[in-house]
Image (cartoon, rainbow, N blue to C red; front, side, top):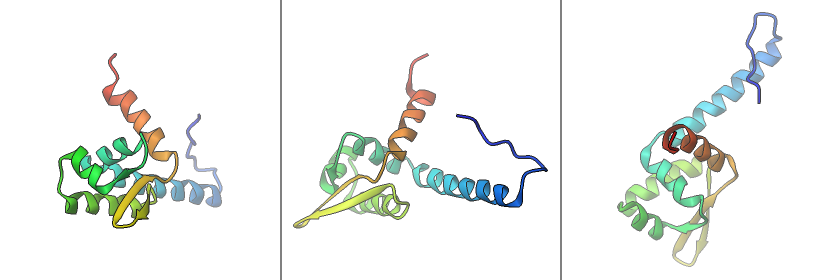
Length: 111
């Protein structure tokens, strides 16, 4: 993968396209910049989980977990599914998984 090179001779349309992508990337990074949201995504990589399961896994109150899930849902990173009174969440697409793999390589993997 090659990064785009910004230069004075690029067209306005090309610069606008890159700026739009930068804006989307910034919104994504803001969404995952909270430890609780990042941990939720880590748990959802292994598959769909109910809010109650996430509460237990995170040792957090329902209100806190729901608030973080709401932000992840707003950013399009998770998708809810209702089954009676229970609400289950799963990753919306492969972006969070790819990001978590990158974070693991940068911060978790032994040298």
